[in-house]
Image 1 (cartoon, rainbow, N blue to C red):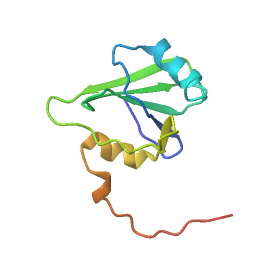
Image 2: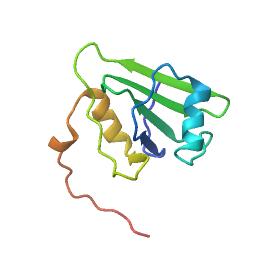
Image 3: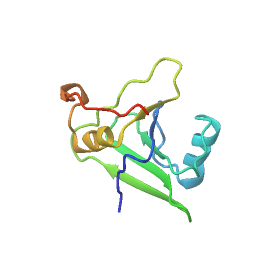
Image 4: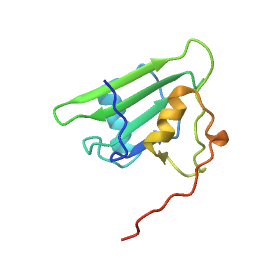
Length: 117
């Protein structure tokens, strides 16, 4: 079961991914192209070229898990990365909205107190 937690970091891979890739290939992308450790507890998100399929790769302490979803209709909205960025970091609630099909541009956040200590 996939649980999205604000204590984790979430990275969207900036290029279309081949959805035939498995654990080793995806973790290789994370290590070689994103320059991050796939074993660090972060969740890495991969979309295909048509944006109708998504894979999430995470290491759960004793092994890798992949969450894979293919939409029957429609596409996922993906936040844009800069020209040189290989990934985009998002928050858990943003990932939840993306997976639910809610446009991130239509979401307005209210001002909240943040402790800066």
